[in-house]
Image 1 (cartoon, helix red, strand yellow):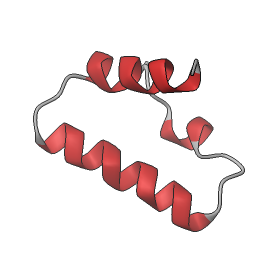
Image 2 (cartoon, helix red, strand yellow):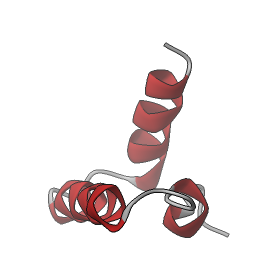
Image 3 (cartoon, one colour):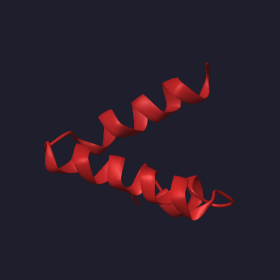
Image 4 (cartoon, helix red, strand yellow):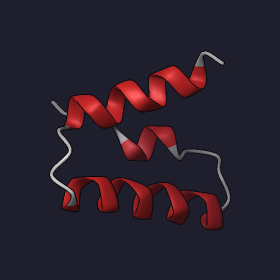
Length: 48
């Protein structure tokens, strides 16, 4: 099971923001960032 569920994360967002989140995740994946790094980054941002 993936740590980062983009469908759950983008639920209720506009298509523009959902697309931004998916593009952001894709760019991190293409840079070979592990899923835990992407997940930790989002979790840190949510607590601020």
